[in-house]
Length: 392
Ligand SMILES: *Cc1c(COP(=O)(O)O)cnc(C)c1O
Image (spheres, helix red, strand yellow):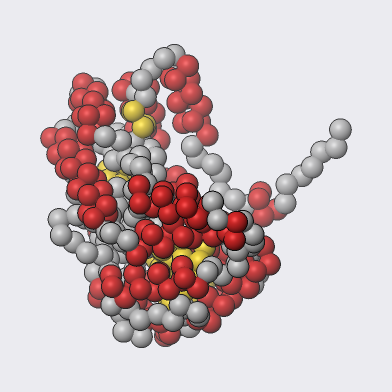
């Protein structure tokens, strides 16, 4: 039998930290334990019916059965541009400043292939969505990590990046509202980041899939709200979290036409775009009634309030996120991220995600996603309370 050695680039991926935890979870499931998972970054709520209807109708039309264009139908790109204008007041040319993506993850993973040469550096937040680092690695680049800490409200200290790193840096990733910390960015920080990108000739890539999952009247900002941002920035967006459509695979990137053209060239050579029926569903989502988004947020917020109140009651010094469906919970004294996750799993049947799985600076935290209903959150919190652990 042949033996096939995987490429060095796969070998260089960071170790999968959840393997042992996954194994332990399977063991609990086998034993018949009723597991409550607060580990899943995927809405449990259904896609709104008017969007499903648009898909069904478009799927029945043979003109949608052929290859789509890699950059997206102009109609979809217009709907995305209109949505951006209405939501953020940002003007975009649908032909050159909007690019459809097979979920925003696809564009995030591919962007470095368009601009990174071996030896180039990509500035990556830590903790973060793992795709920024993986995409960098696949393009032969190096990640330089920007710690996100509670002391700085989980905003990176751009001023602390050494000049020697900046000389080789080509892309700066930011993600607000943030996964996994639930942090948000004030406009002043976004403005500083745009100025910084201009000064150091960086591509500012802002990943914003949670901009519509926000609470207490808070309205997250787009990077395009910063004057002149389009000179240096692109923003990645998605229908996944806003309309409960993670499985549909539809996202888009907006902003600087030159950056999007580079990403488009990669796409042109590796994929053939999004099924047109899914794009029509995306148009229905973006151009249709938005009440479903407000209704969703009410559900997320009720869950957040139950989760945060219970955790605080147990002594956890946890912030109530103003956006996203994640709580970033400091582990009690005497625990690591991993040991706390193991305890909750084995002793309470509750799954949360160890913070160090998102990067070294995530150590000391776990991420609790409120992607289960209020009853299940209450049950999870009751079980944890019975362990007698006091939060730190
Ligand atoms: C969910 C998520 C995405 C990707 O969503 P898609 O379904 O690929 O559009 C991107 N970035 C972050 C931080 C996410 O949490």
